[in-house]
Length: 233
Image: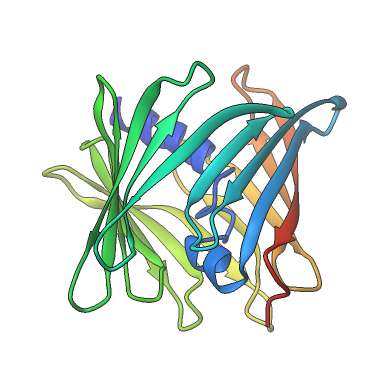
């Protein structure tokens, strides 16, 4: 059961920042205002899902659109130093459904805990002082550990089950310029993922290849478009 849970998480995370070699640090360092992702199955390019995340100047979630329609907005609370201490998420009915709680450490590292109304903790992510996610506890069931190289890119993702062994669930491979060219899940026939980059060395295309829910071969394409608060250095 847990292996199926982890594999489901693999499929989910393949389309998210960490599996896409795109972290919170990229948003902050590149002064990203928004990321728009367009996702479709290769054999059905007309049926597209478009999601746009808009971020604050500090790199925190601000607004999310789904197929052009506002889905979520975030309201920030700051502490005495001006740092975000909490993000409260509101859905399309203006109902508060989620809290993101920030906790800062003296050494510059910090954590972001996501709590859903009525469901409790969804995740607890630990970041180092460079805004790189190192460890993420998922639903109090297992922990993802991101093994980074000297450039801060993810080389492996490990899953630590509660009171059980540590298992490698994904590995990534890099070109001579230090950019990840592809990665693969390592359990339950995990999918393969391929990357392309734009001229700013930000991920511009993600191609995910593997089996779908009906156990048929399927290729999913995700295109990424960026807007910036100002030109990155």
